[in-house]
Image (cartoon, rainbow, N blue to C red; front, side, top):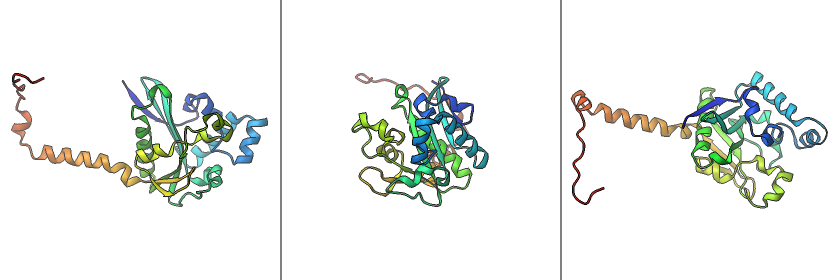
Amino acid sequence: MSRRLVNLTLDTLEDLPRPCRGCVYWELDPVAAERACATGDPGLEKEAWVSQTLLEWGSCGKLMYVDGMPAGFVMYAPPAYVPRSMAFPTSPVSADAALLMTAHVVAPFAGGGLGRMLVQGVARDLTKRGIKAIEAFGDAKYGEQEAEAPARGTGCLAPADFFLSVGFKTVRPHPRYPRLRLELRTALSWKSDVEYALEKLLGSMSPETLLRPVRPATRSAGTL
């Protein structure tokens, strides 16, 4: 199984799931978003937002492909580019953080760790750009009253439990829309720890040990 993480561009935008491709929940303020959905072209509005953000700020999303198939995506930007960010009871986003707007893994690929890989891809990108943290608004009641979710737009928020599972910490609690934060040095520290441990292990071994052929273990009766 091959996995490939790429930047969101105007070309890869077309690989978002259909409902997400035409959704402007985050890109417009609540009034403008409602008007675009009622009388305008939300897909065109989303394309315009991505184009402007790419030109002014840079990469604002990642897509994951598994065996060439779009399997998930994440979008992020400074809160100043995200009008909806001021509409939450736990606003505003901290000045030193980028906002992770939404994260989604296509159902057939769920449970394979793609969500964590997407967040780590965002963390690497933002660290290179000098940003200290990622914040997100989670849905603490994700999955409840699903029939009402599309009307409320809550399907555009990732579950709070997902953010907690990949290292975010709650910085402003709320029964429905907590704001969570991930320090970028924390998000990338696991990789540094693994590399350091491997380097230490290899450094403690002599060249003769590294080149010595490994003998297969002898099985004893009763072992598998």
